[in-house]
Length: 192
Length: 56
Image 1: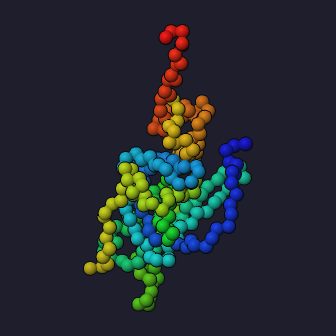
Image 2 (image 1 turned 60 degrees about the vertical axis):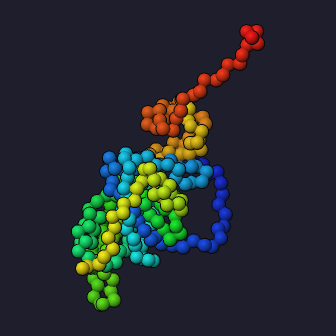
Image 3 (image 1 turned 90 degrees about the vertical axis):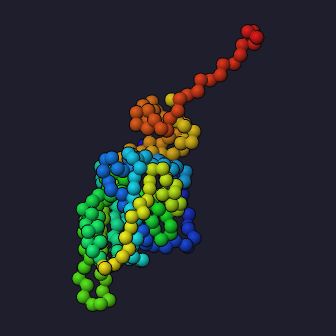
């Protein structure tokens, strides 16, 4: 048999985890600027190393609380095919002139993505094929009343041969500081 | 060549390929590691020969 046998069962877990994601980190995805392969410790399941074409810079996007999600959909084919669709539904409130300029690049680009969930776990998605925008609303999405939501609601999707890699709860930019860096470039001002 | 001790038990994921680094790998896997992932390998150290008592 091929190398796909199970070697452990799974017990009942105590309560304690929560849902949702709070931050995503995007890195521009192209041949000279991406993670090319990932090494995982088979006993812990955590990423133990990444290889990059050159030091890879990620940009941080803070998300609205309890509105954004990360979804992985498994698809198998009768002929032995397997695919993990990695989907992000992200909400970033407020519009501004800077957002107008910069969020277009998010709409147009392809990315490798690190996701921080509300349990403090970092995941790495879009390693092989990248993740890109498939839809959403740009700043205004049918808001009418004063209390309606104004901001960016975006869906990003990628298709990968493996599920998003578990980078553990240690900050990725500390654990893999020689390969992955976090840009200090971030704006947080609303319309002037 | 052999796999560095610290990587034994780890798995490399690249594209659709998954290579498990165990102490013993097939010849084909070793060839691939040499070509694509030399950073996980090191030279085999030559084994020390036992001194022949008769020569002492």
